[in-house]
Every structure is written in C-alpha cells, then in structure tokens.
Image (tube, rainbow, N blue to C red; front, side, top):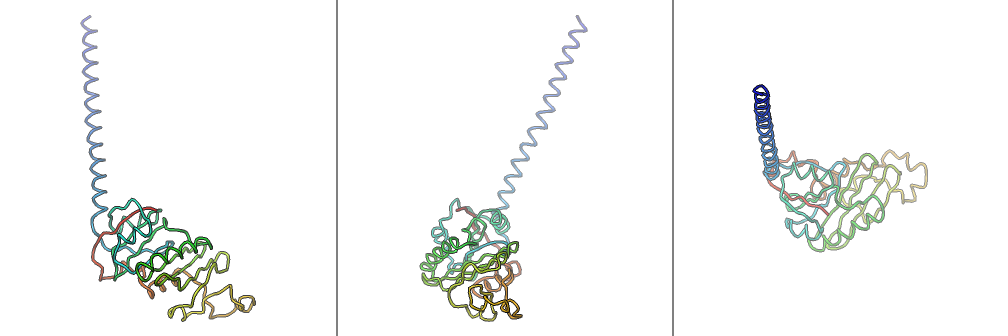
Length: 247
C-alpha cells in the first residue's frame, strides 16, 4: 500500500511539473507574438524615404496635394496611414497606395485600380480622368506590364481627355489612340496599328518605328508629371507617410 501511495504521489508531482513546464513555455511565446505584431504595426507608420514603383503596375498622377479629396473622388475605402515601404508592397498585392504630395502632384498606385487593357477599361479610366481633371485641372493615368507588353498613358485637362495611347504587344496592335501626341511623344514615331501605313508590310520594316516599352512609359510620366521609377534616387523628398486603402 505504501508503495502504491508513493507511486501515486510521484505521478501527481510529475503531472504538476509537466503542467508547469507547458504553461511556462506557452505564455511567453504568446506574449512574444503579440509584441512582434505590435512592432510590425508600429513600423508601418514610421515615416520613411520614398520607394520607387511603376514597373508592372498602374497609377494615376493628379495635380493636387489634397489627398482626402482625391480619395473621395476615386472612392477608395478603408483608409489608414502607412509608410512607403508598406504601402508600395501592399499596392503590388491588390491594394491602393496614395503617396504624399510630390512637387504639387499626388500619385495613386496599385493593382487595385481599374484595369485598362481593353476598350471598356479604357473608357472607364477616361471617365475617372474627366472627373479628376474637372476638380484639379489635370490628371493622368499610366499602366505598364512587360509580360504581355501592355503599355498605356492617358491625360485629361479641365474635364476633357486630351491624349490616349494604349498598346498591347502580345497582340501586336493598339487598343486605343486618341488626341494629338504631346511634345515629348513627338520625338518618337510611335507604332500605330490604326494608321494607313500599318496596312503595308513595309511599315514594320521602318527602323524609326518605336514600339512602346516600360521604359518609355516612365519617360513619358517624367515628362508629364512624376517618374515613379526614380523616386528612390531623389534627394528633395523628405521621409513621410502616405495612405493605403481599397476600392
């Protein structure tokens, strides 16, 4: 009997020890996870230097520093403050990042913006540009994706769309071309599948013919407003916070 009682007591002691060890290991880990989440959340709102973007992305350039009005007109929801690093990362994963003002312009970028790689999409973006430019005077849209070689740039002034150029290299044709080329564009003989010349095979043999690529989109963006691919190289931009949201 004494041996049985001893075994029972030892068993209970062992159970208590095991429970103690389990609880000691469990709670510090949970506490650590909470702290890590808090740290990550804090880091998202620490101002940082501008992060470049543009490649395989789409964005609006709006001649305004009024972020709240831009958000209202674009109907972006679930707005929170965040830094560049967090905002651009989220923008490439379906969200929308509203940059701090840059030389009087606000850029709105992200894969959560409307698609523009078809006629209906282009018409939708045109209407958005009209709305933005009526409010702010000028608004632009850019999109580029090297995989299918889709490249697009559009501009509206005072409620009127003045320029549209959209090219899908995968199909070897333009989706839309409207308006007169801007001064910067006039330096290039841009491919135009709608032109009479394009009906001739000799058209494609012209060494001066320019097929758009992502670098050209960045150059046009820089000529019109802001080249987002060069933001990290700029010394005139202070550390700051932007806004992140969804459509």
